[in-house]
Image (tube, rainbow, N blue to C red; front, side, top):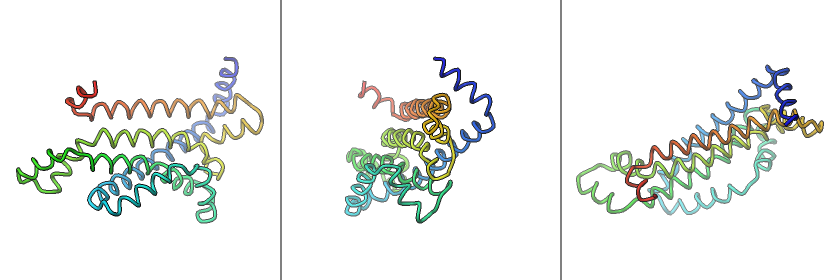
Length: 218
């Protein structure tokens, strides 16, 4: 407990630096998740219509989930250099696979009877996507978003290793100086942010799940 008070005191003494790091961390996380969502959901929809190409892309995405963030940063370093941009690209790359896979799998597992009924009523393919398929798979997509969001918030700490800043600066400095208080100044907000993001997306996932499906799950 005393070390938490030390961390609190350190943060108060370095408020400008702390809030600047929080802002950078939040900006990296939000931009990465938004870009990944647009890219992955759009690609997932396209792949659900072109399943031959899906085998290659989805398996490549699944393999991409096994690559460590530091390895991605190292690969981007010679191409994009150091700073905010390579960190953002790396975070987008780690955020895409869960969203892409969940979107594709969700769309391909929509009940064929629901699709046939909609087509039988004369519904166009675009209306079918927006009014039937996406509402049914929204909880699955949000589950992917939830996983990606937590990964991004946690992994954004590694941006410090390529000079992008953020809360990882405190963690790196705390380890280098064997200063537990400084380490916690970075680690505690990241952990709290990951928990809040997980809770928030979990709540959205619950709200977007049709009531009938909630009853089935219960």
